[in-house]
Image (cartoon, rainbow, N blue to C red; front, side):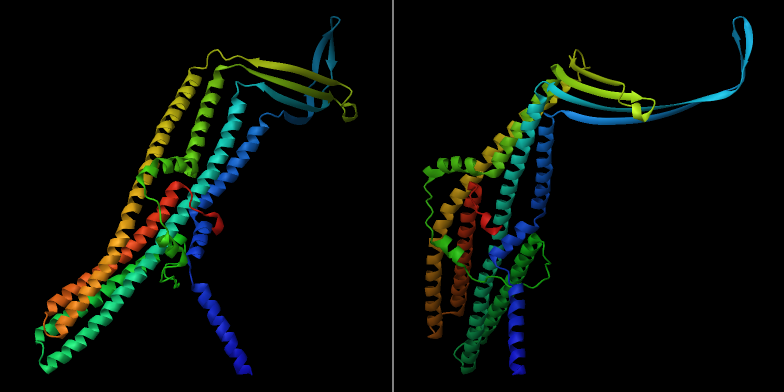
Length: 448
């Protein structure tokens, strides 16, 4: 009974460890969103931006301050002679002390500052919304990059599988040719050629395996994990990839303008840039407020006495307005306005560049999708044709009617066809995801 329980515990522990080391695409995306340093930085900036909005609202509220004071003074006097009524009088040395207590309160309220407060509030709100949109855009970027890196691993597994199968086939062919050479039906040159072919196949396995390990390392590095840690990955096309391959994407070029409009409406990074431009124009309003008068209302209340119990016997209350009209500031305001105008105009240029960049990337993705769709069909047919040709050449060689060189050429063509087909599959899958990313509709919410 104890042995049975121990076996069960070992089985559960083994499965738990295996599950811990397994890394699916969804798990990788969740880890990337949680650990991406760029995202963490932007989330910290969001907290700072929200604090800025609170401070901007505070500028519309009156300030309030309290003050209190205590003063003690002692004056020592030496002996001296004074003249009173024409006669000298000696004054003995002595000292005098005094104490003074004071309390007060004051409040200021900005009634008008050239609309600077309103512009500052607008700028703060725009900055917060821009950061939120930038975080959304960054999450979509992280999802897309993680998908691309994970697909590179799956693709490498597929290519490695092709190379492994080729080694097995070449080993089988070598055994067959060696036996036929022993029987005298083929020359030793064929054996040597097949040995070279097997060696080349084994070399391709090494290269494919190195590519696989590099792909794994790239993903783990991006996720912030230990690149030497051993994880298991999906070696085959998942339901997600199969669904993309089965999906019929409309690649009618006339739809491009429609997709561009959709992208400009959905792209979070583009919308964030538009809000940043609005903030720069708010900076211009703030700079121009330096030319306008400011009006501040104030209230001061104070009490003062020589003894603490009498402190509120003497009080003072004052209410007033301060109007400040700037006449000359040494051109500093003009300089600030000029800088704000240049910053806004330069960012307008950047925004237009971003719009053109989005259009260009979307156009490229659209054309790549169309080419990838056709490439899938062509490469799949090439695999079938190359496989059939290899069978024919192999059969001819087995019957003594063909040359080994023809078999080797046909085998190389078959390997290339398989490789091209796998590459075409993942190229189509990646371009489909890239199209969603460029449209700004790549889903990231389900991974949070």
